[in-house]
Amino acid sequence: MVFPFYRLKGEEFNAGSGYFYMCNFSLRYISLDSLSRFVKLSLKTMTIQRLRDFFPALNQWHYLNYASTGMLPTPSVQLLQELAADAAGPFFTHRDKWFGLQESARESAAKLIGVSSDEIAFTTATSGALSLIANAILWQKGDRVLYPADEFPSNRFVWDNLIHKGVQAEAIEPEKGVSFADQLAKMDLTGVRLVSFSLVSYWDGRVQDVAEVVRVCHERGILVSVDAIQGLGAIAFDAKASGCDFVSSGAHKWLCGPLGIGFLYVRKPLIEKLFVPNIGWASVQNPREFEAKSFVFNESARRFEAGGRDLWGIAAMGCSIDTLASVGWSAVHEKIAEWNRTLRKEIAALGYQPLYEGETTSGIVGFRLKSMDDVERLKQNCEKDNVVLVQRGDYVRVSAHACVQKEDIDLFLGALANE
Image (cartoon, rainbow, N blue to C red; front, side, top):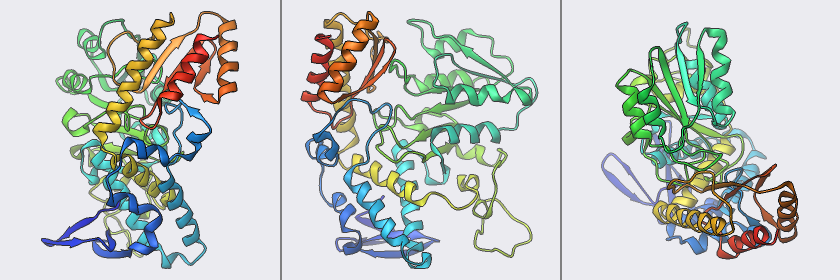
């Protein structure tokens, strides 16, 4: 989100005493002093150990619930405090700064998944992005949409709701030991317009081979939509390399951003082929020409942003992405995979079988307890030790981020063993 160097017309500017950002195609400058509370992290190398310091609530809570909601790191909290102070003054005094932070966040989101910032539109979390896709595709009566039957509701209901357009949504029951791509390859895909699925299952943590699903689908002219919220921040994912058409994600889970904000990736060749369901002054090529009698859509995915956005949420999302990125994504991903291996091994040693029995590097481990008495005992033990996870009936989900420590894991395992 903030860059120690910025290039313009072949020149390199050292931002050792400040930061540059782009707004309306001009180079603007923010003094380091005015942003010192949240940008200093970009000037030094972060480590996994130091990352935990940005989450002071972890001194109280043994938090193993990042697949539900993460927490804002201190730099993002401080940025929001600074933006709130800005808002006490007239908008024109901080307008350029705020829009600059928005575009920096767009760059951060794009870099995260290996695409161009022109292919990123900001949305209200994952559900908003999926709904945008559903309303942007020019459907024909009789079109089919396929998705795994155990998807999160947002990635089922949005397609089921297309029945009024004559679109048939179909849930595909997962087959044990068979990949989703292989399931699709064996099916009659006549009339299928779109396949939508999660990069990582919220239920059992399995990771889909996106590139293989894309291969099966694109050979048959089928679009591919990926719900990536349970993957981004936890595992590596390159949307461009995978070839997928759409990626939807909110910020509030593994990216440790705010609730209610997210982004949509649209593969560039598709942008002009989609309907723009929500249009406003910001959707057009020249958004400052308020007296224009007609309009030309912005050539980028910005056309899907109708008007004023949640600039605070967008800026905080960018800051959270950059906070994690400053550690090094490979280090973050490996630590999460390490906790996954540990949890799966130790849970199995206690006599519980992870719901997904294959290999996975995601941050999610789900399993079932043996009785409702066990459910109540685990709940009480976790409450006693301030261990936070998900329990829904006999279903338990543990999701550990890179900032989790061994003590957090051990307390959970102790609560499980002593039930």
